[in-house]
Length: 268
Image (cartoon, rainbow, N blue to C red; front, side, top):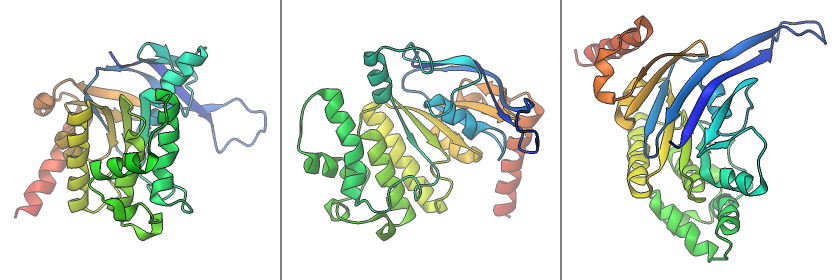
């Protein structure tokens, strides 16, 4: 087991609350538990505002839960850790966000964006290596060539910049990568190209993915397991993508039916 989530709850102070010292809070994540095995691609699907991105931030160490625990390779993500465990966690996980523009430094060239992660890799492996060759190797692994090394983010298309973000994410050789709406801002044809790239990288490096999205077709294309998420809770969990049509809850059935209705409309 690579990732284990045990009954986590996350709440925030209500925005409408006027009292400075008020204690009333709004619960966003409501007792979520699941596990992930190495090599899986778990799709977490839900409508906007369902809490799935808040959950994602917690899974990669960016937002501690108010209650519950998250374990990555048996290490408590938010518990007391030794220095060695802290370093191990830093190398185990990575993330690719939806907003590829704000997730990179606009003043950095592509080579510098990727070098940020390569510095971490050097520390992990306790050895120096040729960063230029390593950067080029990473670029080539995401379908880009050496002409991109000296370019700035504004000189790239959305799909190209997201590929750079993916190269940066895999540079540290993580086991677990969170993909938070990582293709939803891209054009449909580019989405397919990026998803094909992610599948190729997973096959090559045995990455474990969590793929957060509101788009069910993307989940069926990418994932082998699915969680339907709504109002901060797991509504239904499908442990094999081949059993997706057998969902039982009304929420999951409505999502499936909405996709079928779109397909029928587009094919008329």
